[in-house]
Amino acid sequence: MTTIGLPDNPGQLTFAVPKGRILDEALPVMARAGVEPEAAFHDPKNRALAFACTRNDMRMIRVRAFDVATFVAHGAAQVGIVGSDVIEEFDYADLYAPVDLGIGLCRLSVARMADDTDEGASTSHLRVATKYPSLTRRHFEAAGIQAECVKLNGAMELAPSLGLARQIVDLVSTGTTLRENGLIETAVILDISARLIVNRTALKTDRRVAALVDAFRREAEDRQGKAAA
Image (cartoon, rainbow, N blue to C red; front, side):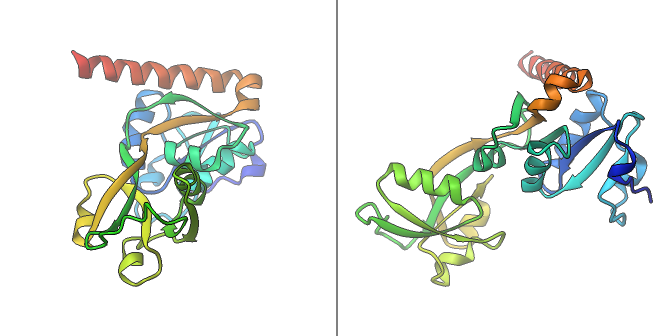
């Protein structure tokens, strides 16, 4: 098991990838763009967070999706992949998302209990369970509603039935989980896809970062071209 200590490799680029739903789709895209982790990365028993890459000048870190944006925005990683939901939630000034990878497609939606016939349109205050408080507040403020956000990191669908919150804001793909928990989707806040993100300073000062942006852009364009053919 290889773990690369970050302070020991100051000349290496650090590429941050998210645990979870996007990673499986991202890995073949990354490989075609020339970014491949060592074999240990694919070992499900390996609990390391940092890995070597086939490129000697690059290492990879595997962290939670929300943390990918934080590492890149603050320059601890120079490049990463994360969903546009995370980018919009944090809105970091030092984060730049130059390439839409066209993977990890889903949406951020509002949902409520199917038997809740009062959608809350006439109320000025609403309690909402979500792990996206910034996006949630902005969405409801636009409708003149003050959203009291209850922060949850999972099991969002339980919140309405247990009286924790009237509505939820969460990621939706097929909608099956909502239906199985007695919920209906009432609004789409944001259509989501995975993006290549870079630290703005690194993009300006390190040619390798600009080269990676070009490689991922070509990969995305080639893939889209083949899909359209």
